[in-house]
Image (cartoon, rainbow, N blue to C red; front, side, top):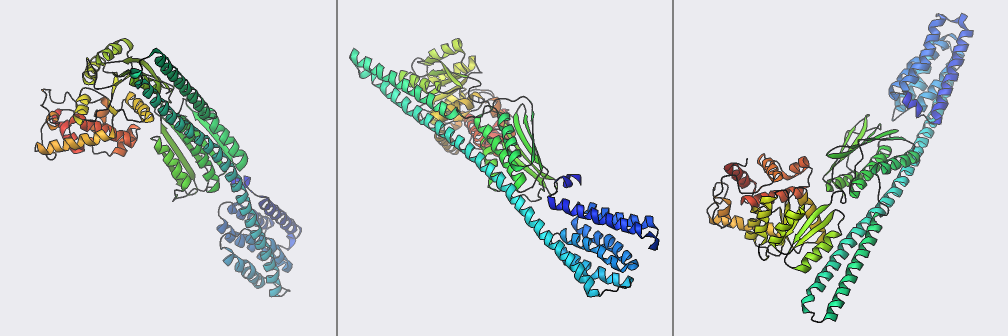
Amino acid sequence: MFDAVKQWFWYEWALFIIRILISFSTIITTVQFQNDLNLPLWLVLCWEISAFSIPWILLQVNTKAYAVLELILSGGVSIYLTSLFPEAYLTFLVPAALIAANSVEKTYRWSGPAAVLLVPLVMVQFSEQTKPFWEMISQIGLAYAIGYAFNLLMVNYRQNEIIRSQNSVLEQYMSQVERVTLLEERNRLAKELHDTMGHSYTSLIMGLETLRPDIATEEGEHKLEALLAVTRKSMGEVRDFLHGMGASEEMSSLRQALEQLAREFEASAGVTVSLRVLGEETALPQQAKMTFYRCLQEALTNAVRHGRAAEIQAALQFEPRQTRLEVRDNGEGSESLSEGFGLKAMKERAASLQGQVSVYSEKGVGTTVTCTLPRQAEPGGEVIRLLIADDQAFIRESLRTLLQGQKDMAVAGLAGDGEQAVELCAELEPDLVLMDLDMPNMDGTAATRTIKQKWPHIRVVILTTFQAPDKALEVLRSGADGYLLKSIEPKELAETIRLVHQGGTMIAQDLSTKLFGELGEAAKASGRGGASGTSGPAETAGRPETAAPAGEGYELTPREIEILRMLSKGLRYKSIASKLYLSDGTVRNYASTVYAKLGVRNREEAVEKAVETGLL
C-alpha cells in the first residue's frame, strides 16, 4: 500500500486532503451536537472514522470494492445524521464526488444511480425532510458530476504523463540504438575490409612469388623483391588502419558499459535501476558485449513501456562456463507475452553466439528477462601456434602472411615436406599443423599418422587441392582433425583453425557431400542397403579391410564419441548443441566426421556400427 502512495500524483494528494478536511469537519460537528444523538458518541465517532479510513485503504487495493464500501459507510453516516438533522444530507456531497472521481472502467454505471438516487431516497424515508426530493438529488448529482469531470481530468493527465515518460524512454532508447548501431556497422565494415584486403594482398603476393622462376636477371630479381616489400608494407598499414577503425570505440568493460546504460536510463525514465555484478569479470568478444548491452537496453525499455515498472533490478553473473544477465522488474506483467521485434532480435543475437534468451512474465508479479551466453575466449587471449607444411614456398609464405594478421595466431615454423614437418613438431611443439597432402619424401597422410602417434595433442588440418573422397577418408582415419580445400576463404580458414584447436573437427562441405554419396553407393554395391549390413568401413569405402580389433582404428576424438553417444540416445542436433554450448552447424560437422570415420551414411548406421565395434 505504501509503495502505491509513493507513486501518487498531485490530484491524488488533493483528494486525500479534501477527504481529511471533510472527515474532521464532520467529527467536530458531531461532537458539538452530541446531546442530540440517540446513539453513544463513541459509537458514532468510530463509525465516522471507519467511513473515512476503511474505504480509503481499500481504494489502494481494489477500486470497485471501494465504491461499494464508500456507499455503505459514508452513505450510512449521512443517512443517520440526516435522520436527526435534515440539513445533514449535505455531508454526502463530498463522498459522492469522491466515488465519481475514483471510478474505474464502468463502475459509474451503477455507482452513479446508487449515489444520486438510492441514498437520497433512503434519506427521505428516514428523515423529516423539508426540502424537495428533486433538490436533494440535483445537488448530490451535481457533486457526482463534478467528481466525474475531475476523474476525466485525472485520466487525461495520467495518460499524458505515461506518454511523456515513454517518449523520453524512446528518445533515450533511439539515441543508444543509433550509437550502438553505428559502432556495430563501423566494426563490421572494418572486419569486412580487413578480410577483403587481406585476401587481395595475399593473392597479389602469391602471384608475384610465382613469377620468381621466370626472372633470369639479377635486376629483375631486385625489382620483384622491391614489389613484394611494398606489397607487404601496404598490407600491414591497411590492417593497422582497419584495426584502429574498428577498435577505437569498442567497449573496454562490459560492467562499465551496463552501469552507464543503467544510469542514463534511470535519469531519463525516472525509474530505479540497480545493477549487481557477481563473479570476476572476464574478457568477452565484442559481439558478446554488444549482445548483453542490447539485451539490457531492450529489457529496460519494455519494463517501462509495457510493464509500467517503477523498479528494475539487473544482475550480471560471470560463471565458469557461461555469462548470464538477468533483468527483473516490478511491473504489471502478463500471462500471455507476445514476442515483438525487439524480443525476437534479442533471441537471434544470442542464438548466433550459441546462447539463449528466456522471458518469464506473470500478471501482477512482473517480468524477468534472462540472457545466457557460453564462455568463449576472445581472439588475442590465447595464441595458437601454427606449423605450415607445404612443398610450394609461395603458398607457405602466403599462408603465413595471411594468418599472422590474426590476433590469436602465430606461425611458429614452415616445413617443405612431411619429414621436415615431423622434425619441426618435435622441435617447436606447435598447437596445430596445416598439412598439404602431395609432398616429396613423406606425404601428408604418412606425416599425419606419425605426428598423431608421437604427439596426439597436436591438431592436424589437411589443406589441399584434392577433392578425392578416398584420400579424405584415408587421412581422416590416419588421425587428421580436419580436411579443407585451398580455395577456402581466409576468414573461414581462421575460424576453422580456432574450432579445431578447441577440439572440433571440420570437413569441407563439398567434399563431405561427395564422400557420403560414394559411401552410399558402395554400401548398395556390397549389398548392405540399410542398417542390417555388417561389413566394415574399409570395405564400404572400396578398399581391403584392415586387420584392426573391433572398436579400434577409427581415431574418434573424445568430443566425437560424446556426440555419438548423444546421437545414440535419439537427441536432435539442436538439443546436442544446447547441451554442449555449440552451434547447430558445428554439431552437424562433428556428426559428418563421425560418419566419415566409421564409413557409414547416417545416424542409424553410425549407432549400429558403434555398438558392433564396442565404441558404445
